[in-house]
Image 1: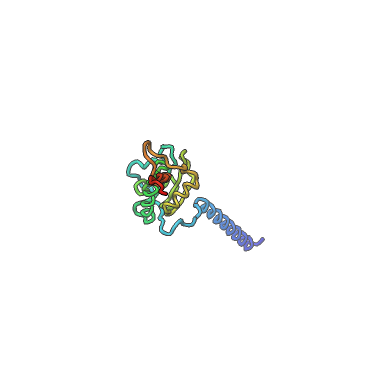
Image 2 (image 1 turned 120 degrees about the vertical axis):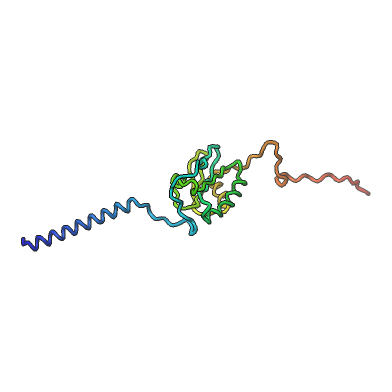
Length: 186
């Protein structure tokens, strides 16, 4: 073999090795990057970086033995602000049947890591044992949230009444009209 052929062969082999090495490196880099998933909503934002919290985060699950609806959001996010009113309504409607907990991930950024958040707001439903059974990114209406909790079987059929509390008048059966006291005339 002549020197020029040998040099050409060495150059081709070096180029092939460089291409293989580059492709291997690219695959390794891509393996460490999570896949890009579609955003849940246009106004959702990514959670803040964990730079330390402002104390102890709200306890989730609560330990009450009830299912739990967790809202992870922020006071700075438009969709999160919308969810504040929704959650207040859901909390009042489901009191005693489902615990509703709001976690501000600006104040408790470690919670964003704990719950593996991609965006806020995110709602997570936990069963009575504290296991995650559902997750949603973005805003929902109170009806959508309650409907989803029913669909998941997390709502008991009827809200328990406090002892001694009478049912709402609309829930009572209508009484029969009193018999007429007027005598029939002939």
